[in-house]
Image 1: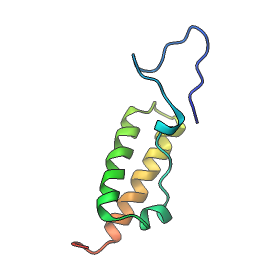
Image 2: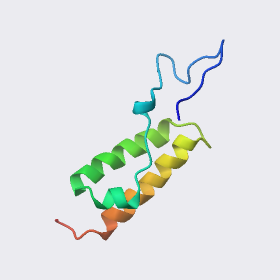
Image 3: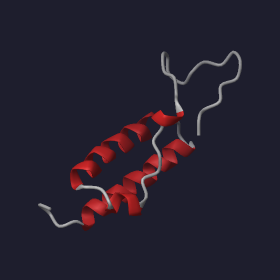
Length: 82
């Protein structure tokens, strides 16, 4: 999912370099169910930031939005305090 840059094009943000390992991957319902509540809150923050930084209509933005939805659903299914 690395962004390909042609000659003469500028990076999306000044000083930013996108690396494949830095991009947000899709958090599935199965993966969310296997994480602790504290981990889910951290993943939610990361997914939100990735969504905000991604260009409209991009695959990265769609993955971040789907991850947010999956994390939110898993958190809602949990018993408070556990």
